[in-house]
Length: 200
Image 1 (cartoon, rainbow, N blue to C red):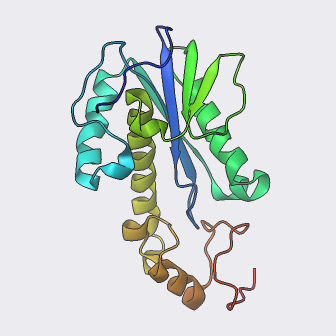
Image 2: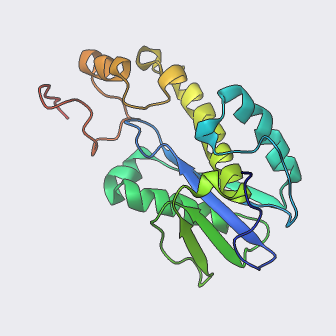
């Protein structure tokens, strides 16, 4: 079954999603996308279902064919300050705010959101596998965040962020245990399992 175009009857319905919520390092990144009403793209899907190569292929297509899009990062110091859920919603709000066209309806991946500028919205669990605009937002959030992690990897190559993108892989945790933490690590997260103590 293919992805649906619209949830609402509104002309400018925007889909929004984030990437990087479960990471130990780097920002949480959100995107917002408004697609044309009768938009169709056969390979568009939830970013988690696509290979990195397919996401990179789709990124410029989404950017070119959407009515408008925006991507925003909320960085680790703010995540530590306001917690990851609030940071994720803030990144979504900022990306919606940065759109060239103000949406008249918002569809959000997941089940948590806060009202934004009195625009009606709907949260949709697994929305990135159901609606095209959320799938498009999930792809942009992921590709932009991955590019950011690739860039900061050059500063701290020992954590191999170019491969793990800041997620809590065994390799990433082993590097934290060996080298300690960087300015990009989220200090409010449990960076190591209980048996290891980290001096923060």
